[in-house]
Image (cartoon, rainbow, N blue to C red; front, side, top):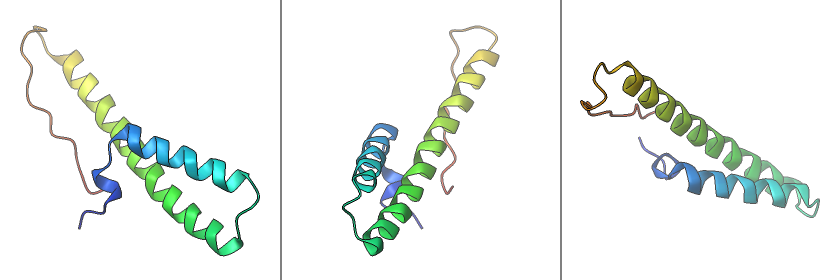
Length: 80
């Protein structure tokens, strides 16, 4: 089952995460909203971590290629 967060790009997820952190740090958020934002932020953090891991794996794959002109297709793992 894919969530809407799992479809976000790294940049979009990071921007949303930064916005959540700024809101939480303002101190003007009720506790119930803080908990909901924390949960949403945790999901976005997982998306960011997944995208960074995918990029790292792709870079390692490209480094291992013997002749820099031959690139194989890279499909990142989804479902994290």
